[in-house]
Picture 1 (cartoon, helix red, strand yellow):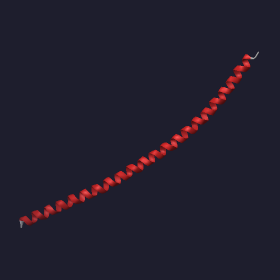
Picture 2 (picture 1 turned 45 degrees about the vertical axis):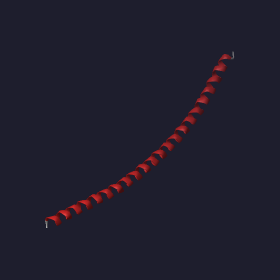
Picture 3 (picture 1 turned 90 degrees about the vertical axis):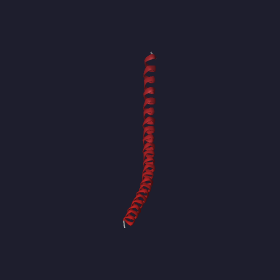
Length: 81
């Protein structure tokens, strides 16, 4: 009777290990999916931030061009007399 109990325990242990391995495989897959999704979202956020930054830089460049133009007009009018 002791042999049957031992083999039953061994079977339960193997079954438990098998269940743990399959659960780990499922978790690994879900982690990979979440990792890929988070990479996609971070890339999307990066693209939006880059677009906003380019937009702000273009605006700033326009302001700087207008400022340079007004400064050159002021300095040229001072030299005229």
